[in-house]
Image 1: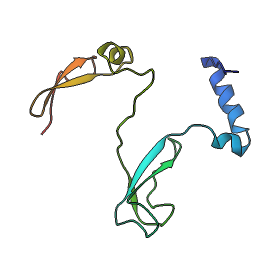
Image 2 (image 1 turned 45 degrees about the vertical axis):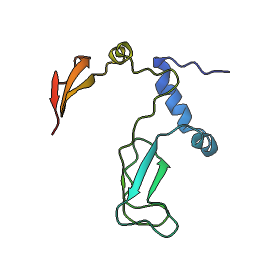
Image 3 (image 1 turned 90 degrees about the vertical axis):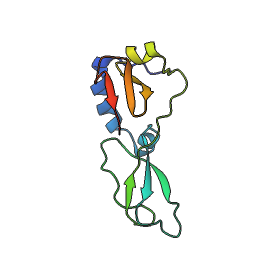
Length: 121
């Protein structure tokens, strides 16, 4: 059965989830963060690795496998399925979309946030 949740029930649901056993909590989706070693990977590690973390968790400063220093990377957003990047979908979601207008110049095409023209050097 699908779980239908309305806004007034979100806090109650969150409290209920805190009381669930650990195996159930582990199955809950969490963001995947990508990290890279900053001083070389350990002998058993790759230069880059991914890890599941809660958004509220602190960033890692050391690789959990080898202990070498690492930093969180900015990753491309993967959109798929029912998500759309059409102008109307972007506007309806409250985002702003820019289009390249020249070398280092971007013009706002959708939305009202941010400047009309961005200059990137």
